Length: 369
Image (cartoon, rainbow, N blue to C red; front, side, top):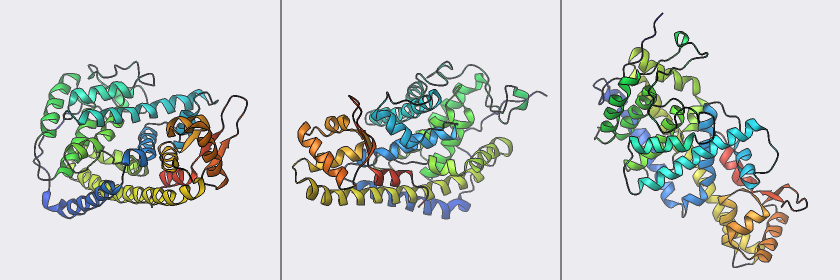
């Protein structure tokens, strides 16, 4: 049986049932605005929400089959020489690449709009030195790919557009990205799904598609900083996520996908907001507690260091906090004795001790609140 490649709809769509979606559009936008208000209230979101960014990378990669956890990633970064399996090491590198691609995108969005060329650059970072590195990182595919449980296209669950149709589909996608739509969240729903249906790369399309969510929210002005983490919802609802994407390709059910996506934005905005508030509350608590324990002018530097990297070695703490070594040693001992940080691995010879800030890890890894 000959399997026909999917022919993507031309954007903008004329099948969106706007009146049906109005209640969800309103509630999703309200939830997102509340979340952005929380972001604005955080004094330094890049530091305080750093673990959430890593967790987003963990969960987005998990959807594609990786098994490494947030703790695995942070332990590895604290001590890359620690003994782990090759499989976990490979998973960790994929997660680190995802996070690095997001960071690069955020930097570049300060001076230029999102476009296909930037997405290709992010894809190149994503696949550097990991699974898929031999599948033309950063290049729009020139071969037919497909999604299935084996290597036979006849058994495929989904066959993306033919290679000759990909450039035109991407040009249309980019034009729609930079156009005005009745509602930005509906536009984002269409952009995300269309990108994954075009499947422009040989590998990594899902991760890039999920990465686009915070980047477009930021670029379109719905968020004051590009920190929105949707992969937790998509991971929890993975079968439904895939079913709705297939619903577009098989039945043209864009409205089913839009409803699902608006629900994802609303629920995840609430969850992200709860976590961000919990982290801010913990930070303010530490600003009261740590100075009382340490009685040092370097207390805030110590607090920032353990929020930036909640799993760390003693030497990493000295370096990241820029506190004089003797003072840093004393503060770290005091934090440990007070139960603020715990020892993960004792000092052995020249190998420094490893510590964890457990309350921050618990907030970050917690499921839906």
